[in-house]
Image (cartoon, rainbow, N blue to C red; front, side):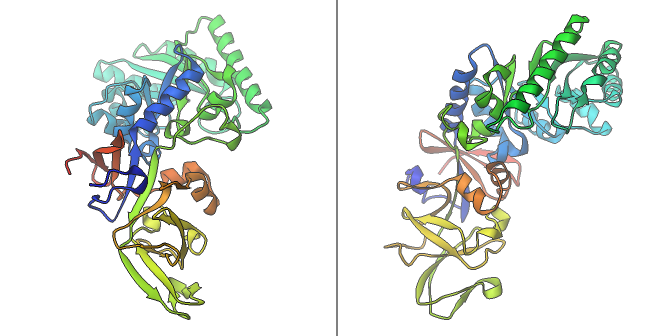
Amino acid sequence: MNSAVGSGFQGMPWPSWIEVDLDSIAHNVAAIRRVTGDGCRIIAVVKAQAYGHGATEVSRAALSAGAQWLAVSRVREGAQLRAAGLDAPILLLGSFDRNEVPQIVRLGLRPTVVSPEQVGWLCEAAEGAGATVQVHLKIDTGLGRYGAPIGELRGLLSLLSRAPAVRVEGLYSHFASADDSDLSYARAQLGAMKQARAALESEGYSFPVAHIAASAGVLALGSSQMEMVRLGLSMYGHYPSPHLRSVVDLRPALSLKSRVSRLFRVERGQSIGYGRTFVAQGPISAALVPVGYADGLPRAHGNRGAVLVRGRRAPIIGRISMDQSVVDVTSVAGVAVGDTVTLIGDQEGATISCEEFAALSGTINYETLTSLGWRLPRVYLRGGKPVSVAYLDEGRVESWTQ
């Protein structure tokens, strides 16, 4: 098996796949820890299948690298981690339905509470199970999303004080614009968060932990690091904004790979793909690549994007189909069926970054990563070699045995 990560693994038994370098995940966690210091706990945000990387294996890597908590957005995501044997504290960042509350209690998830109704649901389920559930209160300091208005905190805390089965463990909020170069709004949010906490603690309420900083806050506003920080995008090796690159060295963990499945000649006047959006102006050599918009290669890349083959850029020609695309390899010497095609990542000194890929789609790196298709196996690397593979569409992880 070819173990050159930059070129992909020729022995991969699939037409297309994703490689995730777990050493890069560990590097990024350690790099952020040097920014926050050892006294600040790290929550590894692994919602949406760890931003497309695969939640189970990334969670294990993050915890081994020094993260202490995990965070998800849906109850089902927390259930998946528990089923995989992960017993770390799991913060539920998103809203939840009443019928999910017994599962929250049974799995020991830490739900985010923003309403009196949620307190009642949790109290009923916890008392029925003879259990105690620990919750985090989220306050809206200016994001205008999921969170309780500051003026409603006392009412929630008063209700919680009469619910012995529900204990307040944390208080948190979320920045709206910490990735902007102008941090005035973020500082105002931070001030509101600190002021609310101080006022409530002076009245006898206790919050063992508080947190407001996610990746952007950690990198842009050091004073926002409270007892905890939430690492999402930065843990995967990407920056919330280009101007934050100078703060810390991050390594992208993910590469999107495929291979040349067919080579064919296109004569002048022949078209490629649906709608005949590409018509050859002269003879070219074309390569069929078995990856399409169902895998996360957007149609917007047709006749605009490029891939890497043998370390050379090859333009995508014609419309991208659900499962296939075509590239012009006329300028790629020696191209052969089976050659690795890199759509995101490095190959023989050349790079197509996630940010470049996202820009062609008119979007951001967050959306690109979380839009990658679940039918693509995630192959995990350590020391540059495969160690395991996750089939997200089947819900299973296997050790690498080839």
